[in-house]
Amino acid sequence: MENVYMDHAAATPVNREVVDAMLPYFDREFANPSTVYEMGSRVRQVVEEQRAKVASLIGASPEGIIFTSSGAEANNLAIKGVAFAKQKKGNHIIVSAIEHHSVLNSARFLERMGFEASFLPVDEYGLVSPGRLMEAIRPETVLVSIMHANNEIGTIEPIYELSLVCREKGVMFHTDAVATVGNIPVKVDDLGVDLLSLSGVSMGAPKGIGALYFRERTRLMPLIHGGIQESGRRAGTENVPAIVGLGKASVLAAERLGSSEDSLRIQEMRNALVSGVQEHIEHSKYTGHPEKRLPGHASFCFEAIEGESLIFMLSQGGIYANTGSACASKALKTSPVLVAIGIPTAMAQGSIVFTMNNTNRSEEVEYVLEKLRQAVGKLRSFSPIWKEKQAA
Amino acid sequence: MYSEKVMDHFSNPRNVGTIEDADGIGEVGNATCGDMMTFNIKVDGDRLTDIKFKTFGCVAAIAVSSMVSDMANGKTLDAATAIPKKKVAESLDGLPKEKMHCSNLGAQALAEAIKNYEENRLEKPAGSQ
Ligand code: FES
Image 1 (cartoon, protein in one colour):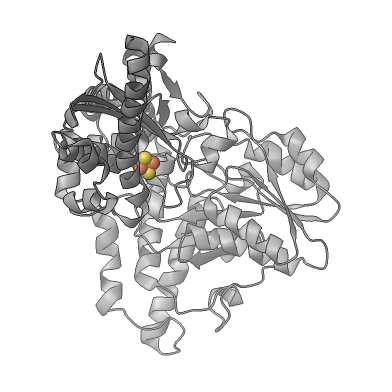
Image 2: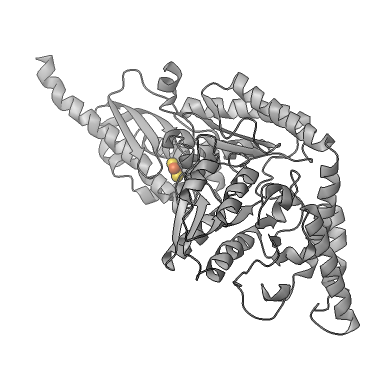
């Protein structure tokens, strides 16, 4: 079998239709959208059309969409932008312990700037409890940021319930929806959020483009000062080709999500992978929530082996997946997500994450299961702690 | 990210396993990430006649163990203990910077096994009287 790519949380291929839509904006329609002549205003018009497409995918109004360079920038803008704009009202923010680094490190940056940050613990499935959030909110809390779904363990958070808590307390609520927008239906009003981040990387748009949604009259301090692009909230000449790519990918995602066919098929593939692992690979742990999770997401920890070596062994068979193992991280630290859900360090070493989407096929799942069994078996035969584990 | 040599030793590691009646056993843990390596050795006179290792760790850790076991096999104990850590990484055509600590582990585990052998030997004469 040729390449089996199951790391769609890291990057997705850009659809041919998306590439074609983008091409004219590199050389033919290259004008700066801020210019006043016809050539420029044509491009301005196109940018605004894309804004409407992205807005429509998440049920928002176009005025509430700011294009950014990435999901990480959108998260930074939401957190720092709100915190700095509301500095007079209070200096406390709340995020969950399993947020993306762009959220966690923005919160830590704010701490250094004199703010206070609370990192909400999660349960063994990675769920944030609305009751706990209620207790954590103080009079000086200005922002709560809880991700929609976690890319490492697939768990989908109870965003609506959490939003009710924030509403009751009069606190702004942001969600990092990079893992969900384009993969499951996401509507800002159903979630009850004030701000939402999304990224092109996870939905078939090119890298280098993301967006932040904000509810009207939300005050945001810009991160990038300069011209008045993006209604003064983000300076810099618009990345028009990428914006067109994100617009097109949003339309395609909306079509895909319109029928449940695709998502059912993805879920079936996922379930087949999970039950195959549970049946055939002993001493494995399915991480994240068993039901409240992304449809194409399967994550495990295999005891007595290490994730980076597992990923490399699988990649020799053309299979691409991800891991939260300490050895695979530049800082040699176990993924904070696995730590937060209480996985012991040694077990977290054996982490693997498969993220499938509509481009995967069910034969691929069979192939992955076969290769995975072989690879886990081989690595365990090298492992000094496997015998004990097996005996236990 | 890894050289072909590393991938070769990772995919087909030499000398994986344990030795039933090992003369020395060395075990080291990787404090940084919680991984582990064991070396079992057989000694005849002052020479290593057999080496087997087991590793719970990353690609580099497995390749390093394999390379160390290969380089040390048949050498005198002194020569084996003197294998420089840098030499191991060099023989693998280099390792990524953040993986250099794994190359230290291999040599360390072998050194532990040799130390263990020497301790066993010191105890033996007393027992055999
Ligand atoms: S064993 Fe953990 S980085 Fe090599």
